[in-house]
Image (cartoon, rainbow, N blue to C red):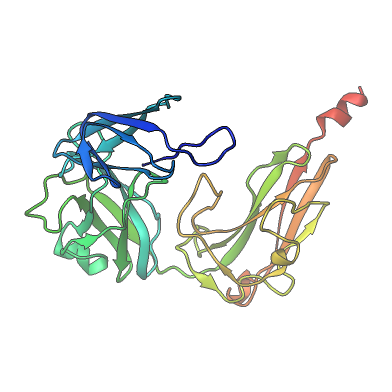
Length: 327
């Protein structure tokens, strides 16, 4: 934690700094090597107020108060989690796994005995040798480092063949040493091949200039979405044609990007980015005026001949303001 002090001219200036901590943890001032639960130091040049917040063997929430001779800052909090998790809740992140490595296929949310997020090293393990024949391993595999953005552990699964497999997440590198074990979740490994392709908007109607997401989705022979894969020619030359005055301002989608014919579909759905498992996503902005926007494309050579046909999708822009003027 850095505390910097400045004078009225915005130049660094030395000032007395007091930092205290309550709850778990202790402080350490790096410039003077002074530690404790309350430290007062004189910052020589206004830039050496560097304090470390160190564990003291206790788990829980620490509250840090910082003040100078002229200012009292808002308190900050830091959480220290226990060495072992108390509970781990597992969910499936990737609905359909492809053969090979699947990053973040299973997710875990762990807390310690105090209800504080447990962010230590988590591991994923197949429930049985039979499950491991389909995917994963009965030897625990390390999950990725704690995901602070989504507050969870993302655990990989390597799939070997089509089928289903059950997994658990634990808080140790061996099953015997684990203090907490999650609920059991089932993953599905698919080797389906694309038979057709579908175009769709994320909604049926939009307001003028509203953001719209376009999805290109390969489907298997039963009409279901599939595992993430790369398709060399999912669409025929020309890609997706848009009839309507859509715009691309503020997005990474351009008019040219809709003409691509090769796609890598998403493995997971995201409420933040709009990604949808099994689909390729494009973002556009609808026209300012009311009307219909239509998409059209033709299935490419990655599909069987029966799937190389024209597909369309449409959405309506409702201009309520213009409609009101006609009343």
